[in-house]
Image (cartoon, rainbow, N blue to C red; front, side, top):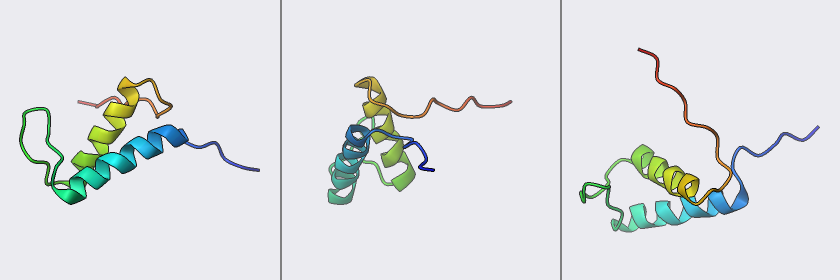
Amino acid sequence: MMSKAKYSEKAQEKVGKVMEEFKEGKLKSSSGEKVTDKTQAVAIGISEAREKGLKVPKEKKKKD
């Protein structure tokens, strides 16, 4: 039995493009600072994909 993909192909492409920008040193955060953390770069890619309405998992709720 095949499992469902967590992300659509278009969302994966979007994250891939953001990661390329990160590797080239061109990716900036919303505050305008250069992104230096790989995890932050992935989060930016997922956020941008979500804004475009692409299939990505729901945001996890933080527990206090």
